[in-house]
Length: 416
Image (cartoon, rainbow, N blue to C red):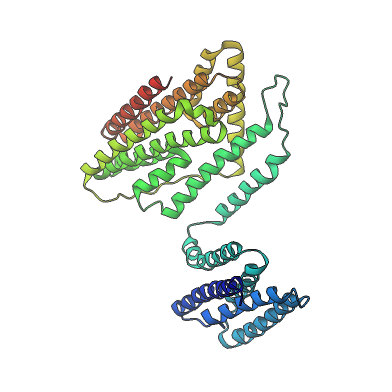
């Protein structure tokens, strides 16, 4: 017997056995009944392999075996439904897929068969995870995911990738690409907050909430801190984590749009993040409290209205920066950066990174503009913390921003 044949035969049996073992253990755990276990699935995979192997001598052998397997499984399923009243078909379809795993060993490659088997196992173990998602993911969240697919896969490709205005400023494709990027990052953070649980893990919620909106986190946590004074330090830490996440978000956005600009921005923003985290760690070690608890209410960032607002904001900032650079040079760029950074740092960051990539603006000027916007945004959030949380909370964040922004400034000075 050829060694390759023996190895392939053993691999087909092993992969089928693994899939069947998962089903057998799952059924035992749920105390349910299914037609097959580890040995049955191993044999199904073996039949798939042999059908593919001998098809070179017997035409359509694999197709005949596939049809016979489907008919057999269908009849078994019919009997099972009559006995147990359970109409689930996961095991039955897993068995059919296992037949293809065995065939893959011969028709494609061993690596392909292993990959397919792992994917099948991944899908099979999702059941428990999906149950946990019920009650956390709403219909609106599913609609938002569909909207994101529509935004990125349908709308984006059909938009013209050129300026459409007389001044040669507005590129609809570029604007919508930035909308997709911002919305994608925000939606990931929004789902993460829902999966973690808005009332579980204050610090972790602060991190993922910072991916959606560090401003929203700052306002929500500040209001809670004014009511729950005993956990004030923990709320301050959570706000600090969200703001540090904003620094990381800037780095991620620049990386996607213009990696060359990271030469100026990577170390300043990493320095701000690490120094802030170190200070927050010292705060945390002094609290000696529990993990905190709060309800963080964040708006789903993938509503159509929100996407259009992002698009309008980005288009406006893009036009202002471009025109300011044409007529006022770097001074105009810096002024717009400071003003736009007060309310939002994403639009100005993506605008400057894109214009720098197209050499419309010098890289060092774009970097200075992004830093100025981040500083303005941080000062605005600090003001919100003092307003909603009071001096007792604000002094924590005053020290946090002082340390992190100082680290950013020093690193940026040496980078330039």
